[in-house]
Every structure is written in C-alpha cells, then in structure tokens.
Length: 154
Length: 287
Image (cartoon, rainbow over all chains, first blue to last red; front, side, top):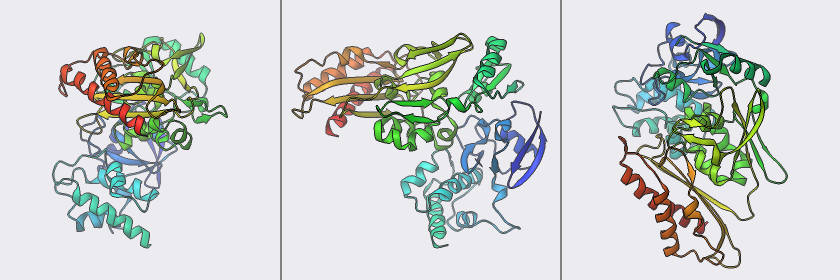
C-alpha cells in the first residue's frame, strides 16, 4: 500500500507492506538514527515522536502514522548545527556507545516541549522507556534538566 | 509481517470485517501488546482491523451521578492525566501511570489492556474493585460483561470471536471511598509480579470501622480476581485492627494461585500478596 508520511516536516509517499512497522520504514528511508534494539518495546532505542509524543517505533504501524507529524533524531540539527539538547548531551558526557542516545534525546524532547520546568522525578518518568547499558542515567538526567533550564530562559 | 490492515470508519464496518475473517482477523487498538506478540510469533492474524478511526469508542465521560464511562481507545497516558479520573478514582489514574513505560502508556489502551489479559497487567485490579463492566459489541449485538466474569484464563477472556470491547463502565463510588493500588515488580516497567487494589469505605462514626472492603489481585493467578474470602471477613461490627488486617492478608494470600517463573517463585508471590494486601489496607485507612 502507498502512504504519505510526514517526517521531520517533509512529506513523502512511501510504498509499504500493510503491517510494516514505523521503525523498519524509517530505516529503509535512510533515517537510521532510530535504532533497532530489542524490537519488543522495552529498550527505547527506536524512540521517535509521533505528534510530539514519544513512541517506540518498533511497535507502531507505519500506516497508523499517516496524517501525523513524525520527528526523528535527524530532524533536530539545523544545517549541521546540533540542537541544544544534543550539545548538552555532549557537554555532560551523557553518552558512551551512543546506541541509546537518539531514543533518549527524543523522549526528553517530548517531555521538555510540554513541561519546561520538570522535576528530576518527571525526567526519570519520561525516560522510563529508554535503557542505557553504558553510562548509567545520572549524566543523562543532568543534560535534560539543563536543557529545560535553557528553555526557560529563552 | 505479512498481514493485511483494514482501517474501518464505523463500528458496523469493523464488526463485519472481523466476522468475515473469523479467527484470521484481530482488532488492533494501540498495538503495544499485539505487535510484540506478532513479532514473537505468538499470534499470526491474516488481517488486522484497526480501531483507531472509531470515534464512538474514544474519550472519557463522567456523568452527574459520578459514573465513569471509559472508551476502549482511551490510552494509559489519558487515564493518568484525566481530571475526572484523578478526582473520582485517583488510584486508577495511579495504576495507569504504573503501566510499562511512557511511550507504551502513550499508545496502549484500556480496551487492549483488558482484552489481552496479560498476567500482571496493572489496570484490571483497580477496575475490579471499582465493579467495572465491559461493554462488548459483536454482530449479534451488545453484551455487558462484569469484569469479574470477563477474565477467563491466561491471555483469555470471555470475548467471543468477532466481538470487541467498546467501553468500560464504572458505577459511582460510595461517598468517602478510598482506593489504593500497589504494584510489586523487579523493574518499574515490568508487568506486576503482584498487583493489589484495595477499596474501602470508612464508617464515618469512628476511625477504625469500615462499611465496605474490596480487594483485587493481579499477577498471582491465571486471571486477575476479587479476593472474595478475604473480603467476606468484614462483618457489621468489625474493628480494623492489626489482627484483622493480618487475617485478611493471610486469607487473600490463600486465594492466590501463582506460578513460578524467572521473576519469582510461586511461594514468594504468595508471600508478597500477604505483604502488599496488608500495606494497601493500611495505606487506605491512613488516607
């Protein structure tokens, strides 16, 4: 079946199998920031935003995402200039191998876009669908809280 | 995954497709359990029938008589955030907030949650103590199934082929009712190893008497259930003493029929029923 997907602000017509998963479709389109991890909705490496809300793209039918705004990690940097949250992940050393990072960043985006003054507990809850197996979570939480603070100043 | 997808725009159309394909068709709501089961090869439908476009099974309604009507497509995130639910049954909102993780709560629905009947799902225990009723629709018409009779066995409910859950109806609660849901799990995002919902109604006259006691358990038997023997220990003049709470908790543990798996032994689960029932009653009394 042919569907129109709006990804990172751009519309594209894509030929998909009816039950194709959003993660597979994104990766076939060359958007490989959303990672294949557990593929059973535990690890969050595949997290993208669907209408601004965090979703595990391994358990979203691509057909269901038509008519909705899909945002992936590739949609954040503008003209090669990293997004503030990406810069803060670097500054706080909030990544090691980097496999979980796109998912972490998208889940954190979903939070801060709605709540510019999150508590640590709210950050933890927003990231409860994302596993990191390298660094632990402390630096990640610090980066997200710093990002929220930056947003409040703007 | 080679299966077809239909996206009906009316209930009639959805029921017709489900009936036409029989066992080869499965309704899909949020897909958060179903797509994982599909990937793991536990199910192999030929047609998925999306319920997403059915406006009539969306939304949360609260009536003036303080009844709640929850559309099957209401997500856990909506339950968690709903002003009506936080006001009328706050422990249901809290239970919704304990389901899996944020992305799953954003898409996973109440209808899907009860229809899958996964062991340790968080929503059934609070819905059971709220005396919820599932409104189910098939080509033959509407059936109202009390949730107490809805859950039949592991991953199995009394839904018939071609039938879907449309709404969950919750009657109004007695004035002053207090509810608590406690979840015991290794990781927060897991299904509950033990899930306990308690609802009680203080007698008003004195602090230590109650006029109603309801207990539901999840994760510790083939189906989530009301611990009727434990509930029946409440008599007319019962004072809620530590001894009484202990007796209720012991009785509830005796009603559990848990399994041993990688997370915990049956024996441990039974012990935790005792601990968490006691804790839930205490917390409800202190509210």
